[in-house]
Length: 593
Image (cartoon, rainbow, N blue to C red; front, side, top):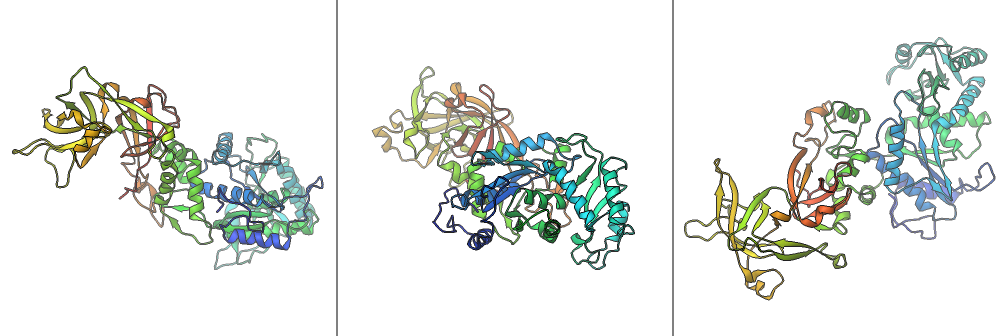
């Protein structure tokens, strides 16, 4: 996978990181396969041109992020060589009934957010498959004229039935031997809108007995009277992916067409179409070549667009950008950073073998990214009131803590010690378990728990208050005035416990959303499983918490390490000054069970 720090070594190896795709590209560079190409203006083309071609029928997810980092990363790294490299952004918008401008905009935004763009040498390389509708139609006519395509008038069910299966060869369509002139006339009438949806399709004439079912006279055009988000009602026939994709690559001079393994069986068709058009004089060599890599399989996650759409439509999540979703907009809202996603993709590498990547690998990439740069802050997520009985009610004392323990240049954050504080309810036990070194009340002549309030004073528990349900509502303690952190006398106090706290009258209230895996099963949609059966009922917990005073001016998307609790981000949609909302991005360590 591409490295952000990749540097040219002066050879065909732009990075010490290698994989089978780099080896293929290096081999092509050594042979000069794509070195002599020029564009229409006669200007030399880069020897490495890749592309990222999503269909705008949904939001991109973490699996797409791997492809984005791979295609754009390869192009960027090889651009350090004299032969050059670039990556195109192409929207494969050939299915008007499922595509939308909303998805187009979200895709472009996601690629930019991940740190990539489609500008090369001052020129934008943003394309749409719909840009090529006229070309695709003309190329289909050429194939018809050369006897390599025909109009089939069978129903979709008949075509499917006659296609056969792995054990049974297909049967020729009764319309397969229509003369080219009749096929051409029918195809032109299809374009003119003279037929209803499903009455005719255009198929390639290859081999109905081919062992690869993909090659059994695949359909390349169908009638669909539908409004297209870019071409409007100009077209009522639309090309299918396998015909569009390879031709789009060739028109854009793509050299290495990199896709996931599910398209491996389609590679012979990719080559067949381009070679047929080359023989007809449409294209010249060298033609693009397709290469496949293993898609990202992440535990506790699904990446099927259909299933993700089902989660949204059935309101099992709060939308495409729900922080539990694996969509780019979702993980961005969760608090994942572009750097952490690129680091994750680099760590998992590229191979041709399918494997499962544990969610902990993604989470650790985020921890590693945020640990070095996220400011620290204090948050009390389960507030319990602590009253310092021997501290004056009208007094307060300034305390401070570093914004980041390893970056003193970031300065300090300040807060006050006082009589009434918020502490974590987990830091107090009525009957302490063995090894519990925090607060507990005195009992049977044994003194109460003694500990240090972090960046403050040492205190000793002297009692508690229960409500009518015998629940602890207040804890009482005394403080030692000469024990303040940073003072010489503080060294005289040796305690094992150290907890965080916030003065009640300067605590900043906030809504905190604690997110966990959306599914309880590591492989929720494998085999015959119904993924809905494994939705985690505890994947989202909304609580009311208190933050230290410096957080009052926090802005959306700001990220912090809440000490002891993990990494949190101010929600980019709902959080604003005076109404703070934080999402837990990831804990300080892998705690999933």
